[in-house]
Length: 275
Image 1: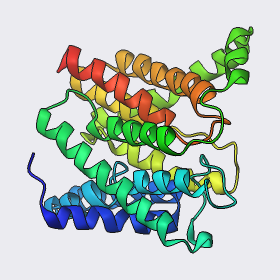
Image 2: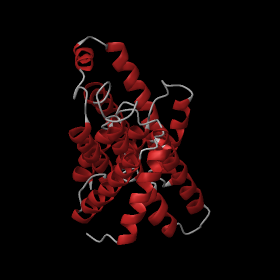
Image 3: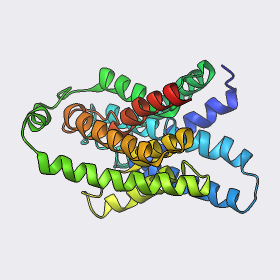
Image 4: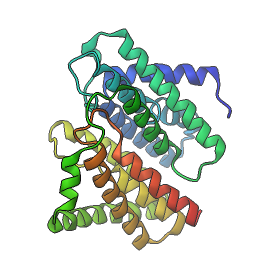
């Protein structure tokens, strides 16, 4: 594992900054940075340096989002905020301990991510890192329930129309992502669009997250060039996200990112079977 001191310093600083920005807000910025990189690459501009230091380090969700999420989980023990409220800036706390935890969460995220890359884990290494730091935050800082009984009861009920809606919605999003990825060769651009689109959730709390669908569909298309499989995998990613979120995230004490869980599991399957 080749990790430099400067990378560690940048990761720590990104976590501190991410804590002030807010977790969801950092992810929106990740989407924006990804779109900028795609536009520059399409224009024939070499983005290697930009991607290495900005997109895949400072604004890597495994770094900056993890820092904000880890700090939020810690802040809930000392301030008027709940540990899953990753859409809030922590600047209101004025607490140096909170921001140090943000830096630590980001640094741990970068080290774990680098380890996964060095080991050649056949999955989205960023996604498993977001999951791992989320689990660590729950183990260390959770003060509320670890799983949601109401979510379990929902899954036990007959919600046929809801699951049909979820299948239709995720299938169409996956279709668009897979088709555009194959046509353009930008298989992960859907992820950046989905991440940036979360800016709308600040105006409408019901605005859906779709990055787990678009990235999984993009991966499936990149490895198989089969649009039907891309759609199926996108639907599976959304179902995993919904089920995990209802049981282990919604109304629980800290945030363990459901889309990251889905991205990791689906990418592990795609990379292992078709890689």
